Length: 210
Image: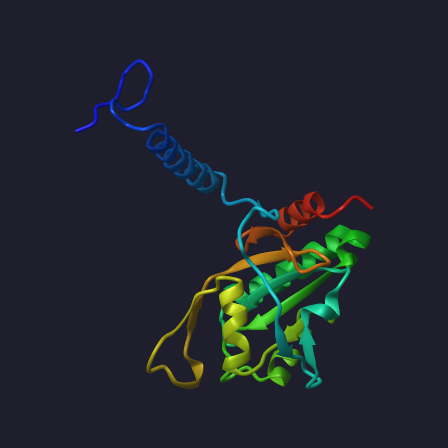
């Protein structure tokens, strides 16, 4: 068995590569713990950061196919949810709308997008009507399961439907706000339990200075 040298912190008999892997593992755990302690505030992705996001093709309330190319040059704030959600989803959309209003002109440079994770019940028209209750600026998108599946994979969104609850059934899903830049690259993620002011503050920090 390899023993650790108390003076150097290395393991006797371990190769430099093994020590480096051990250090990276410990550092990674520390980063995760610190992120949790900080309340997961706006984790920023770079080109070397999380592999999150990608091309999509979904339908809006007018029946038109919408892709990421429609938002080229504009920042988007993407949220995945569903219209039968009783608490988190409506609260998140209302909070996002308030946050963008608080940002003023800078907020108008961001297009909020709501993507349904429940295509069986949430037709594009249903989603369009739903998001209009919160803001005329929110783009509501839905589609077939075949269209939605790749998008969920690209954003690492997990979805689990509760069985045996009929048309009012609940759907468990991961909840984050994804800020994407004008080239559909991830800028950062914001937890949905943030207040409108916290979201506005995070966005102001992540968006380019006007």
